[in-house]
Image 1 (cartoon, helix red, strand yellow):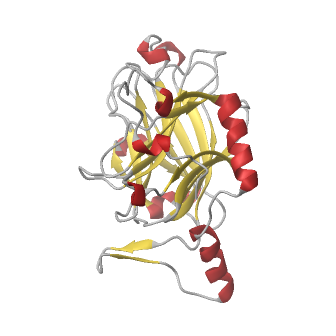
Image 2 (image 1 turned 120 degrees about the vertical axis):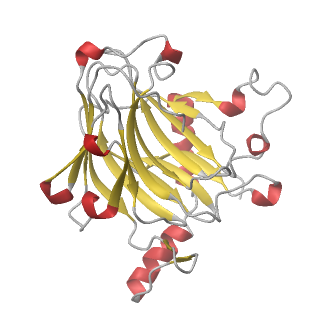
Length: 295
């Protein structure tokens, strides 16, 4: 994820709400940046993060995970949102960090949002794919999901796969499989690059900008990192829980998922780093020449 440029005169408010399954932002997250700009509501089931001229804000999960299925429902900023970014991502931290990003790049009123995705492995990113959406993300809530298991990373919108990054470590492509990750939500002003390459700046007269998040969910069988033992612990339990864990830990793209992904790529992808000959004049990165549907 790009570094944020935090300044100017707006307040960008991000409302996050969790499902009724016992999640509590006040209990499950720390405010690691901009503590004064985080306001918890409804007993911790909601939190508002704001960006103003002083600072923005970032939440970080208290637990770290080595593999999991993470969901958030998001309703994006309506109307004028140029220069703003709302985000949902997982990241390990460190110089050779792993990271998986959903970043929503705001736009001028009436123009579509741009969904910017990126995947870092072993400290290397530059794997951007961008999409326009096939619905109005400001009119209602939609579910954005990250599935991360030893086989692949899959990004979903409302259960529809939009991107897959397979484990091709055997072919020399690093894959996130060793470092535990926190879950993050953050907001910032990125008018230098977020909207049309920085040509459209933030309209501070339109502030505050408000986005709503709800129903944060981590798969019940996610593997939580034990900070004391330095290893992941996948929950024990009855047969039903073990079956649920086995299902997402083994999940790969089936035939229908590949067909759906192809539909998204053909109709809604607007940028793919693999096709950028200007950035990669001597040939695409190695993962780009491996057929994405190959087992």
